[in-house]
Amino acid sequence: MQIGKIIIHEVGLRDGLQVEKTAVPLEEKILWIDQLLVSGIDIIQLGSFVNPEKVPQMADTDKLFAHYTVPGKEQNDVILSGLVLNEKGLDRGMDCGVEMFCMGVSASETHSMKNTGMSTSEALGRIVPMAKKALGEGKRVQVSVQSAFGCGFEGPIATDKVLGIVKEYLSAGVKNISLADTAGHAQPIQVEELFGAVRDLDSSVEMACHFHNTYGLGMANCYAALKTGVTYFESAFGGLGGCPFTKMPSGNVSTEDLVHSLQRMGFRRDIQLASLLDVSRKVSAFFGRDLPGLVMKAGSIVDFKKE
Image (cartoon, rainbow, N blue to C red; front, side, top):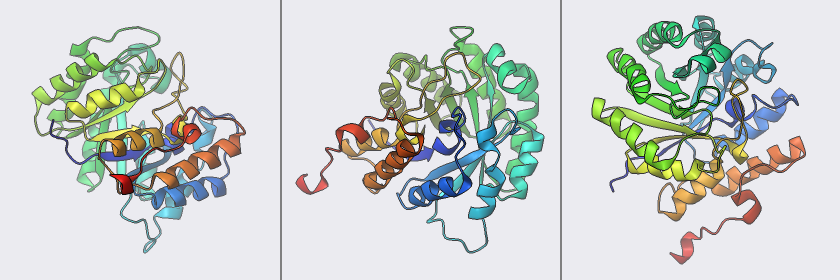
């Protein structure tokens, strides 16, 4: 199989922390981010521009971007992304220098209402103009279909509904499209079929994936996505995280587990796995508990010198 450039999008600061009850001080987040910046990963999602009363952990997102977007501040070519759900969030992100805007619509009506207070069609009617506005301002934009592989409240999600949302994105001129397994229901054959259907709609689409490990299939689904031509992989340090508005929040695919697996297959050997592991250990120590990531516990078996 032919594999394109694999892009690692670290979402631990947002999706990883949003369900945590213990507030992480700004200074602690900066320590983690500084180490992520030198690890060699490609995109770091610093947070989301949401109501801090609903997601208190994201209350300092504006300050984080302000810290890292000071003119002349070295970022080692890492792209800083932020999640927005509405026009107010987009304006906040514009004001503090977000480089890549992530925004999306849930294919599950129930999840959409719990997450945004809007139906799928209402959310789509707002997200598409927002995406166009951000693109018009010269920003990178990634749009997503959340609950694309199933919903904890509704069960299976019709493929036609997912593809209908994707068609709206493509019609708006947005080519970076993520399918998110918000509830962790995806399985590898389904992943290959759904991403294959997206590719059939437009062969120039930049496909991204976001898997949760609810039922232990996160890494298997990443490999299935890789085989279909997905190039953007969203993951979180230590496997932390989960959507607080889904029925059963569970962790993301672990960034260091994903990178370790890719490196064993000969990909992304430029990434410093040791730096990622150190971040996860710091996060684990901060929360005072083990994280789901496996390589952090078992140790790396990647040794480039012997190959």
